[in-house]
Length: 379
Image (tube, rainbow, N blue to C red; front, side):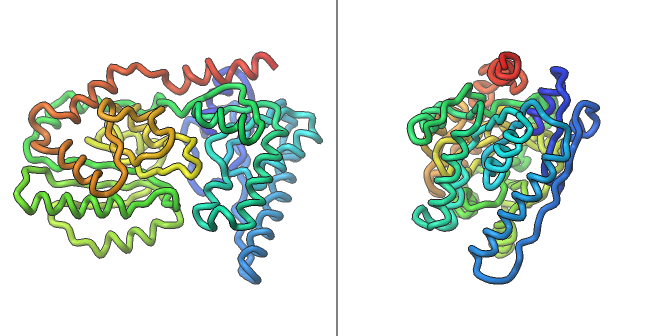
C-alpha cells in the first residue's frame, strides 16, 4: 500500500494513507509532501467472556473507529483497499463511499477467510461467516485488482467479481543486487553462506520445515561433506515468533547460527542484496496469491528455495530461478546441492543468479503504470 501511495503521488495525486503505525513507514512516504498519514490506534481485545464474543466486540469497535476516521479526512475520489485484511474494512469503506460518493477499489492479495481457516478450520461458523461477508461486500466494489491469473479466475468463478487488471507483486526499485557481489567478498574461501528468510510468523508458514532441514544440514557437515557454515537470518515479527524462538534456543548447532531480527524498511533490501540464498515457507492459505518475499528476493537477484503450493509456478520456475520443495528432507537436499563447494567453482546457485539477472522483468513502478494507472485515468 505504501508503494501504491508513492506511485499515485508521483503522478500528481494527493494521497491520505490510513494505517497502524506500529512500524515506521518508509522514509520516502514520510518526506513526500503529497502523502498525508493518518494513524489508527490498535485496539486491545476485551479480555472477558468467550473468545467469539471478544472477537465480535473488537470487530465492531474497529468498524466504528475506522468509519469515524474516514469521515474526518478530506473527501476522496477513490478509496484503495488491500484485502486481506478485509474484516471489517471492506464493509466500512463501502459505506463511506456511499456517504461521500467515492469509488471503492480493492487490491486482492488473498482471501481473509482462508487465513482464518488455518486457525479455526474450514467449517468453523466464524470462518463461514467471514467467507460470506468477503464475497458479498467484495462484489460491491467499483474496481478490482489482483496479483495472479489464478486469483483472477477464482474471483470470477467463485465470487462473481470481475477484476479490472492483474497487478502482480513484482520487483521494487529498492530491491537490487549489491555492487559488492562483483568485488572480492565473494572470492573469500571458507566464508559462511548467508541464508535469508522473512516472515510474519503466522500459521501459513511452517518454520519447523526449515529447522528440521538445518538439522539435516548439520549432519551432512558432521559426516564430512564439504559444505560451508551457515548464517541463517529470519526477519519479521508476528504472533508465532516467541514459539519458534523457543525452539531455536533449544537447538545446539556447531556449524549454523540462527538470528531473528526485525529490520526497518530501508535495511531489509540491503540484507537481501548481501545474501547467498533465500528460503520461502509461505504456503498460501488459498493457493492463489504469491509470496511477496520471493519477489523482493528476485529483485536482488537472490535465488530461492520455496515450498510448493498451487500457483507458485507463476513466479518460481523450478530449476531455472530457484527450486521448489515439499518437505524438510527435500529442502535439506537442495541446500546441500546448492552449497556444495561454496563459494568457489561454478554452481547451480550461480546459474540461477545469472538467469535472474537476464530475466529483465518489469519493475513495480512500470507494472503499476501499465495496470493500475489506467483505471484512474479512464474513470
